[in-house]
Each structure stands twice: as C-alpha cells, then as structure tokens.
Image 1 (cartoon, rainbow, N blue to C red):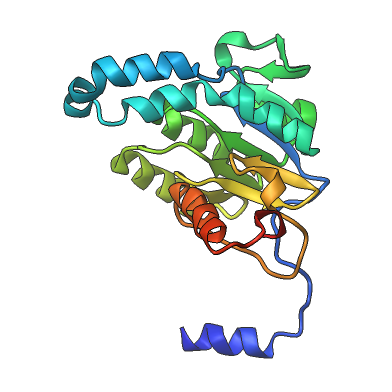
Image 2: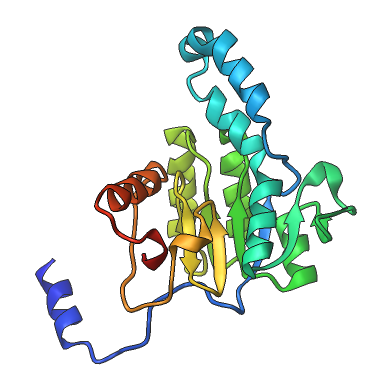
Length: 224
C-alpha cells in the first residue's frame, strides 16, 4: 500500500489512464435482446413476487438483462460509441440496428477489428460469454450482468490470471465511459462531462445512489 502511494507521488506521467476513447471498437454480446415492457414487468412483479423470491431470486435481473442489449446498444450508438457488431449464435448472419450479428466473439473480432466487448447475457450464460471474449483476446470486456454464480466467476478469474491481454470490468457494474467519446454500459451519458477527475463505483446500484445524493445536495448532475 505504501509503495503504491510513493509510486503515485513520484510519477511524472500526466497521460490519463482511461481504457476507452473515440477509437474504441465495441461489440455487444447479447445484442438482440429487446427492452422489457414496463407493463409486462409490473404484471410479473405483482403476480410472481413472493414465489420468485423463494425459488429464483435472480429472476428479475435475468428478465431485465435479456431485454437490455438492443436498448443499450441504441443508446451507445446515439452517444457516438463505435459499436461495430454483436454476437448472438442463433441470429448469426443477420443484421440488428444496422450492425452485423456474428456467431461468436472470434468471428466478430476478425470481421470488425473490435477491441472491446460489452456483455448483456443473463447470469446462466454469462460465464461462457466472458470466457469466449477472453479467448478471443479482446483488450477490454465489460460485464453488466448481475447475479452470476460465484463458482462461475472463480473460473473466469482463473482464465484472466492465465493471460495478459484482456482486462475485465464487472460483473454487476454500470460500465465505463469517456465523456463525449465512448460509452460502454448502462450509465446515462448526459451526467458526464470531460474533466480532470474520474469517478468509480463498485456496484451498478451505486450509480443511482450517487445521482440521488448529488440531487439532494443541489449539484448540477450534468457537471459530474
């Protein structure tokens, strides 16, 4: 801990250590999932709440993530992120949102030159999606999924330690953003602006808490 403090103090580098920029090419694993209907979700919550909490506590995160790929890819494209394709084995060879859909990460990387991947795959399939991205040697893999079994992440950690190419952000995170250049994840772009200070959050739920705290303190969210 002390050695890291000394290293930071004596460092002369002023280059920002940000892993994404306007040139980052991103693919989305789980791109064809659609945004869940608010009405459908409300009905599901009303009729199934206690039963699902008892038998499947991660049901709602599974439903939400399954439908999130399309919506968040649209938002990333509007922000200016270089989304170059997606991965969905059952829909390989088609296009979605004007982007090509591939059968696997290796095929997507070879065809598009992508160097980053964002994963919106439900917990049951998240491990395989992450391992596939690591095997394809993406420089950055961002996992939004919540509720991934611990034993699955043990295998993911082992795979990460066995290589030196891929960096992993997540799981259960809002993603990463470089204001006005690249947005990978679920955070709203309008609350971020270029500056000298970065902000990190350990859990995706903390993003809403952070915004709420700023709001009650009368801070301008757009300046954060």
